[in-house]
Image 1: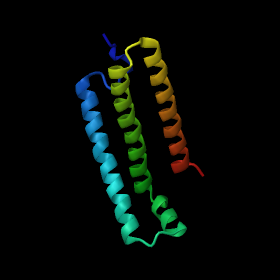
Image 2 (image 1 turned 120 degrees about the horizontal axis):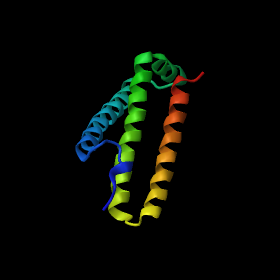
Image 3 (image 1 turned 180 degrees about the vertical axis):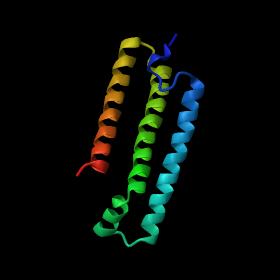
Length: 114
């Protein structure tokens, strides 16, 4: 039996909701960026101007956190389905979790750092 200690939510329903909400956030973010690329003559100045707006930084932060949560739930599901031995599963999950944590912290530093 697989213990649910390492999943994101407290239940499968919560994980399902987080997965769906994060997918919508990522879809909206992708569509916005595609629209921006289509209607704007992208240059360093236009890109910097976009990221200078607090609302877009918050939107980017939401997308960053969404991709971390979405990826964690997906990887947790795959590893619990396909890696039955506890120690290898734990090691893969720990490596994935550490990698995602580093990417999220790095992304926050890029978004809000100076």
